[in-house]
Image (cartoon, rainbow, N blue to C red):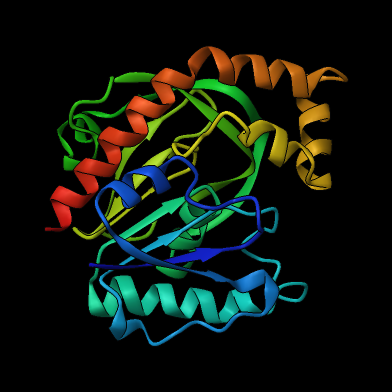
Length: 237
């Protein structure tokens, strides 16, 4: 199996999921779109993961490569119907590329917060073996406002209705982060846009508050990531 990963900033990579990829001997390639790397021929790959980033789906003037990325996602999911997994920005890009809409998240969700699986989510292959209500790391100020056609909402939170979704039968995405590692908060907190958003939501001690919450839930995050990874791989095989 060959996995293609779209990245939008150096520090937002597959995180803890890399450990499971290595254990399975999965060959994966990261395309750093923010560094001007070109999208390769899609026919050469079996699955696509799209990670997070500080830009928004509508920032096409500042990040013109978003246009090609959305076209690639549309081709991958809607035409080739190959397996897709999107996290945070990757969740929003899936919605935008497939005909849905995104808009401001008010209030922004930044911190360790609970998400709850919907009835459809509890039955979905991706979430088998995970808790119906689970703590997750959130760091976003944009939401999926209207999901695309042929979409099933799989998880929600108090302030964000579309926390996870499946588009058709081959594409899954989550607004929250499952790939969290012990150094994730530190690394992301060094990104100016993320740092400011953290301060706006959690106050002057926001980085320490977020780190403490992540540390307390790290075992839960890692178990959930492994389960979702295994479920994804089982579902696409």
